[in-house]
Length: 162
Image (cartoon, rainbow, N blue to C red; front, side, top):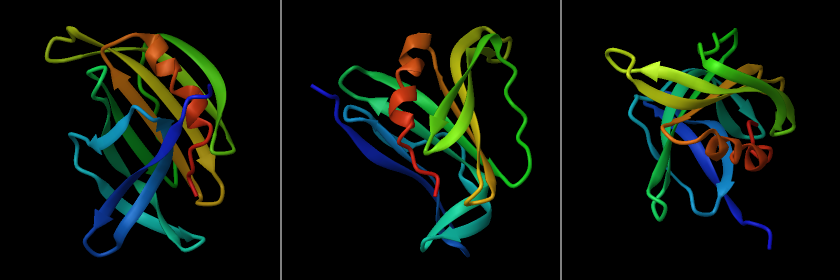
């Protein structure tokens, strides 16, 4: 039986510009999308087929699997220019497709905290969307295994960025 998925919209509301989408993620049925820790911000937007997309800005969200009691922190950055990649330790690069675009990804770890004692596993994905004229940078981070983040790659192929 094929696992079921559903769409989750990562969006922010600007008090002048109104709501703007960053990305529509297709995730397995057991995952929910919740507000993240960092504030969302939209600097520039563009319209594609009647939908406003954040051309430059950032969003934060938490992917939560309540039954398995696990979570993944998601940071989405969009820019008309470049976005510096994270400095990962023991990284492993790869290629994938996100929403019909060729993307590069990197799996690795990062040390965070006051003394760098907390180790997090990170999946960093970057791609360019010509329709919205922006670079999209996705960072999934959690304290579990690399395999859990690798499992997100197949459903992310069906994400929408325009």
